[in-house]
Length: 284
Image (tube, rainbow, N blue to C red):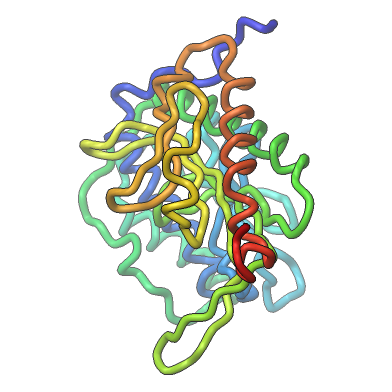
């Protein structure tokens, strides 16, 4: 068994986490404003790379494609056109997210992407803190979580979404979709939403320690609560409903990968039946 530490301590990460969250919202603003709309909003998410996070590609008026990378090895925001570096902005310069957005959107405009951008998602004039070591530690945890999530995802049949990093919540997750369908009304329109189960990693925030999670929706409280879970995991019903696994239970553990896979498999085992058409027709 490898002695590699997959999930190192994230103690002290908070100042850098805040910077990365704002910066990630800046780069995702480009595909949000100018990319092809996905009905599940997947176009605004980021994909994990070995060296950081990457946006979807955005078509330019001249036929080329633009994407943006948050490089956590070179500690920079990189704008690439047809996979060639167009512009680079250091994340070590203390630049506020407002100023970074000004720079990024100026380059985008010069490439032909002009239009309204919702700046409320990232506007902040405070100078940003950034620690190289903390960013590197986060990258280690993120890359390993992404790899393990993809390993679990490959075992699932049916419709499964991609593993994605969400700038708004600053978490990594993917969704498996059940065959059960729920209807709800929003602004006078009835929508049909498939039942789903996610698997995610949240690196923490002020007052909230990092954790892994898996949330079945709809949450069948009577059927699920009380079902046995792997060591360290527990049912969570305050604020959100699902299963909670503290990051610290896997932190610096040599068997972390096996434990995380067992967590994901067990939650799927107990939740999937409640997300099927058969359950919708009447459990039991």
